[in-house]
Length: 614
Ligand code: AGP
Image (cartoon, rainbow, N blue to C red; front, top):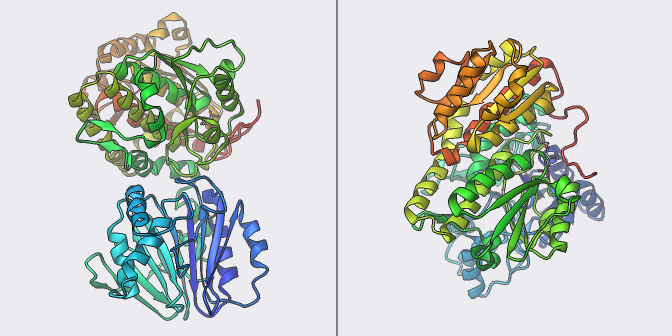
């Protein structure tokens, strides 16, 4: 997630906004920049890389400006570069914008503005905001704040913005829709920020901007209006959290924060990509290969770890929707065996970090064999993203916790979209497509309700408490939930150091059932789907041998409560989208057991967030 800090008051604004950006570093970023009023214009300074580079650049500033805005960018549209770093300006350089969020309709707006003569200098979606404000202000009919309001009304997507305008040097214009923004209220000074962590050093009095609010901020006043341009009275609240808690958004660990971010990140993975009318998706990142994909004869998906589990789900989805043969390979194996890849085939690589050495090597091996390689990546501009022929970003934002959670469910969401895109090219009907699109749209809210339930009842935490001392677990699932069982086992292993095996439920009879005893819980993913009766049989086989059973089941399923020691209920949805829902209990169970066992949840022993070595 990007970071915004703005200052207006009597202090030297530069150290204030730099310090504020440093408080937001934990959120992850790839470039930084700031802008300030010089007295006869606005100066913009931007760097690719860390804030320390920005600090070096600002050493050359002689005067002590008292108004500035600053930004740390986590790239979503346009590679990480100095050019794409914020702030962005209009054609005149008099309007300067920093922005958090995603503008879904930026292509259309950019085309419209270009036709109106505007000259764009970056690849970002953000730049359209500056030119749009310029467009509305240029005819001189509107006061500047109304030009800002008019520009924002054209935007589809999310924004938190701070704007400087050369002709109004003692004001900062701030607005919020879908991306948090607040104003720290000091004595004759205000600090605008995307996160309280940036203001807590200066004040504990904050005004949280509500959705649709536009604020005109000077050092001694704040004028706020809503979408209907009605004045809104600023409501001052107190920050009670410590800085460390603030950085984690009030959660005890980044992993838990990221688990609870999934309703938003899943929404971001869908944003601007659904074609409801035609029951399909728009994946602009693959559009140059639509013809190739229309005739593709086989697909290989290669990845590591959690991303490999997502790849396995992709196999089920693509074969089910598009009847295209899919093979999934560990990247570390793919790169060293002699993979047979023929003309007319394609390779997908999946990677959160975009830097995993094995996956990068597999990508290069596939390219050496002359087939197109497509990426499903989180970090924009990462090595894997740059080296693939094309691809799609999952827009999950920085994932700080070593154990992948929100990236996994967003990877699955993108694989759902890719499978639907391929399916609709290969005979998957519009009616089916519309149904699936409708189910995908439901997922973020279903996940949100599931998380709310857990926050209120703490059922999974109670289960974790009962089994916290067990040292062996079996995770079992069938169909698209089999890879979720693997993912649940990996989550438990990597953060609680407890041994856990994931298996297709039917495989249990071929050996693992010998492991069952009263201290070896079996976690079953047993939601209602065509294989439900089969998995009930597997549950009975373990129950007969005295193994404790924890089942993830569909709300309203009373039958399973007679068989399992504990049931974690999840909402009903099409089986094809259930992995994004059944993954949540897997994540939470592992998290709570790890916390109870006192391990370092965010940085587990021996692990790195990105495995850039073989
Ligand atoms: C998942 O929780 C682990 N951190 C690990 O398995 C990870 O998924 C794997 O290293 C692949 O990383 P990538 O997605 O960044 O390529």
